View 1 (tube, rainbow, N blue to C red):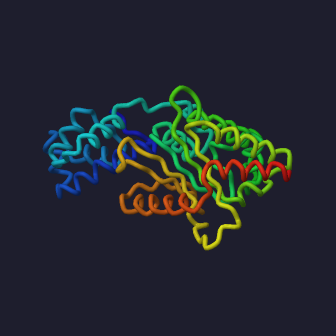
View 2 (cartoon, rainbow, N blue to C red):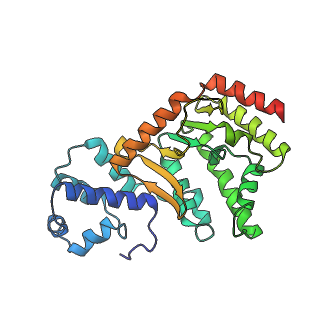
View 3 (spheres, one colour):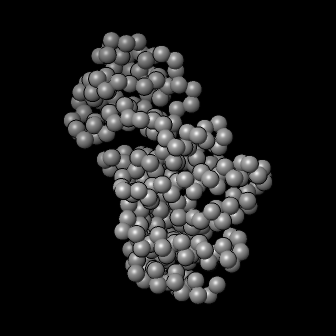
Length: 283
């Protein structure tokens, strides 16, 4: 079987978890290979996401590694054997890989939590807002690529729609609500859309006002995606070198604590809606 050329973030996560299980069992790759009756290079390919793994082989490896967490093993099996393509694949080769990986992560998430201080979170953005954000990019994007990015961002809203939408909680600082990334009309449309979305049972919007005293958590921006089991959660971080997918248990624990701290000092959902409503009256 041909090796993968460009594994997705989800495929890489499966590979990482299998390597972690082997290392926790203090076994060498050649010992895992012997258990499956394959060459050691096959284990290397599986653990680098260059090759897939069947359910039978995955469960055999998990047993060999003495992993007894049935829910975790079932979740890994789902990652290994589930459908790997979705609406985002139409953008393959057209947009950076991180755009596709983020859409796939959101598609499989059991819940989503986001904290933003300068921008409205992506899945909550209107088309005009998203276009203004992408238009400010340096170097400037060609018109066709800009429109692709806007269309992709709008399609990400699918997680909030349909019969089984993903539970979504956003904590947004007042700064993000007040910054006019475009004109006043676009800002009013964005805030109105945010209010409408916040009325949905599966969407929770909380606001951190400027007036809050003693808040030093402005570096806590994050997007947190719940996995099928907690140890498969993922944090998405944007840095100077692009999008990073964070998945070590120690780091996840830090971000869980950060989200609880930020959530605790934010306005409750009703107060937040009233706050956003007041802002619309100022525009």
